[in-house]
Image (cartoon, rainbow, N blue to C red):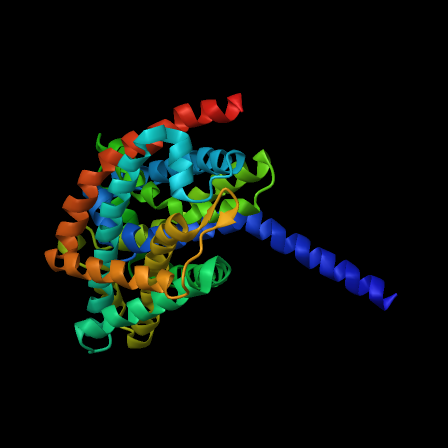
Length: 373
């Protein structure tokens, strides 16, 4: 009787874990990779959303969330059907010889996002802990190297746990800001009508952020049916953007002054005036920088050293972390151009490329290929 009870418990636990990996894990990995380059510092939310006005920015944010879900649904099913768990295989199936255009653009975006990661981690070290800028950059490099060395299983576990921590901290952050200046938020949201550019702003934001999808493809191996792909894809958009939505509402309370701040997160934390919470928030943000760097670099490693038609490519144990550290060093070199310029100019120019070579093809040609298959 005891053995049967234990067996039943084990089956239930395995089923629960499988359900999590199939339906929720892709969304949490997507959120983990998006956040540092997408809204971790708050500057990205200002650049793409708050510049459209409080209401226009909110509409743009919701539009991005919808685009995320639609593209992830099509992407996950395409990857499942064609067993394309690295971006080389995925985009060769989707674009044929044109896949190299995506890879070239992805490498450029990778360096830009790693530059943002380096700049933000260095700033956290200086502004929060009073340490040298290089210490923050070095800490990110070591953490990313350790996770990349650990492989997919370790990365998935760490991303899942840290996403839960992130949600908790962002909920506290929003609740505290709402308590302090919730009345101002309501006034600001009703003071200006939505402009006409919010839909394009939402599409632009989704366009460059969806380029991080290679980091998520490895999780599709857990999915076993079309229903898994569609549900996981539909959930990916809200999972990725709910923390950003909470952050956006908090920033609305300081509109329009916050538009000119390099790191809006620091501005809000200083207003709250709690040194302890500032440290907690910055530690969590530092963790998201590590997640984003790890996810993007892991996608490159899967392309270089992952399975090819079921056969793993032999590689020395030091190869994966060496690739990670090398890419982070290159990103650190790019970071000298400054956080605002990187986000405003670098991301903006690449948006059109990713919409053209990924978003539109996967929603049209990709869906047709899956249906035909």
